[in-house]
Image (cartoon, rainbow, N blue to C red):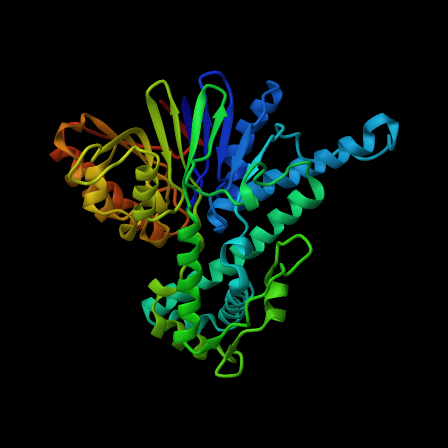
Length: 444
């Protein structure tokens, strides 16, 4: 296998290729970094007559989905062009401006509405209201507590992500020949009692998450959040909010969201409510990340999205890669671990570092939200078993490449921690993507 990891700012964008030339694209990062760094590589594939066998959007966060939207728009434009030009039906139909992308054979993505059901409307409505209020009162946001700012940022980001998810669903439905999640019951990519496995040429992919339980927990966390803070979500509905089942912010506002019988009327009121709840209780779509294990020739790549560590442990246990912490298969050793959630501290503990071990750890982050956090880097370096062999930390951004002073400072702290860890652990090598390079390649 071959794993190419692209600079994707604060997001993920990875191209996994099997030994016999089949390709899996996992997430697309931000639209701008996708255009600058990923599209040229995909044009190479198209020029060589190769296809993308599978595109996986792990979840709807904008730092994972935006680049895929760009790709699917191009796929859709060329599909329409080919249809118009076929059999001479419309020989003057204009050719799309963007170069032809490689053919995409399949798409896996779990729509937000299928994950949170009847709460899709209230969540989107709250996120949209907070985003609009934030835009109108930037100075007030800047003077709020750090926790309130984080919560407001989470909700504003969620509004963008929900809109992106709606756009993706509509692109697939209306402009491409793709069928989302083809072959999965209920059109949901989940880990089930019988794990779903798919061949990617000579590589085997196994779905290890999410489970229906994870989606249920995501739903209940949001419902509890609403109830504790005085929001009254509408009764559960039995039909989707749009003909395609996509839903969206417009549908969400119509669905209604009230606080003590009314909607929040100001940023101050919304911020107070959110601050009392705490940003940790504003549950983003990370809990629903599609996670995969790719295996070939005794080598493996663990693709984690933004999943929580417990979800990964449960998934690996379910497919027989991990057992009881003190028993057989207490440790899973993979070749590459895409470190979950960009190296956020609440997603990786010392126990996880001891139990899930890799030869290569990929940190896809640029300092946004303080990720990758130095504590995670230290946890892996100090917690990883000493008999697990040499290993490498790979970083997609340098101290200089990030887009703001705050992000550059966060990356500097992370890389300082990594380099200091390498002085304490002779088996550790630190690799940082050069500023002018679009990606690095790990030969798995």
